[in-house]
Amino acid sequence: MNISNYQELINNKEYINIYDNIKSKVDNLIKDIASLLNIKIDSYDYKDIQYQIQSKTLLFSNINVLCNILDNYHGEELIDNINIIINNYNLLLSNIEKYLNKEKEVNNTKDTISDIFDNFRILFKTMLRYKNKEYNTNWDYKELLNKIDLYYAYFNKEIKIISSLLNSNEIIIDSDLEIVTITDIEKILLLEEIYNKISDEYKDYAYLYPDIELEENQSFEDLLDLEDSKYEELYKEMLDYKNISYEDEDIELLIYKFYPQYKKDLDYVHSALLHSKSPVEIINTMEITYNKIKDNYNNS
Image (cartoon, rainbow, N blue to C red; front, side):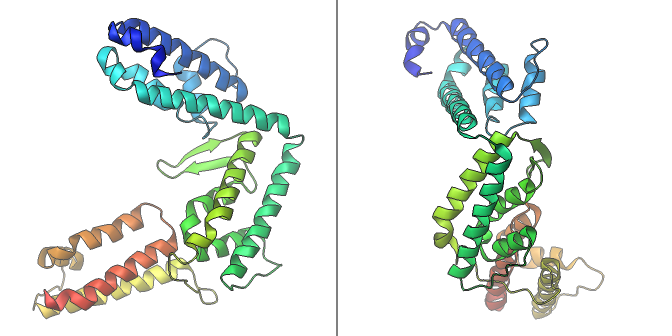
């Protein structure tokens, strides 16, 4: 799809013809994707098929962008969004081609998936050695993933996906906790994409965060509890500095009130806690913020 295909119609303001043409192309695209994902089409129910696609794929999830625009925009508003339509339509076509090519290439999906996980193990071993960290051949896969998540927190999102796909085809979408069950072919494509990303970038992000070493039987929850305790003591210290009583009061609300200059910093900490970020990133954010406030509050 190209903007030049519609330029004359746009110039003539033939918006209905433009809409009908794009709608027809998108409807056919939906059918093609449904066929790839083995979604049975008894009667063509646009919304039902769109919903089923959404529950079975990440690769084609931007079909929702096209459908939402067509559902909500007509006339000149549709033209305002035509570049978004074209870009998403062409991306979907490209992904269909990618899917079909992988389907032809793979003889046995189970063997291919097993090989990819073996390659990840080799890559993870290399990554640990790069940071002079211990690698134990007796670790099961989950423990190995935990170690990579600990020392390469930048890839937390990717590690979560790998962990989800170890023994299933289900992925949890963090934004709304929706579970998407993908096909073996899409699983292969996704794992290969993640493998290439980590392989290409791990050296660049190996030292993005200071390393955290957990003591024996210590968890990230334990570290977060320690951070919370440190913050509570700091808050009391700050309020004592201004001779503000905090007995039977919400200490953090008092900090917001009497030290408003740190609202943005503390909001950032809360945001990190609320949005399922890597535990390492959360602790690093809390440490940076703590040190900033600790070193400066009595100068304000």
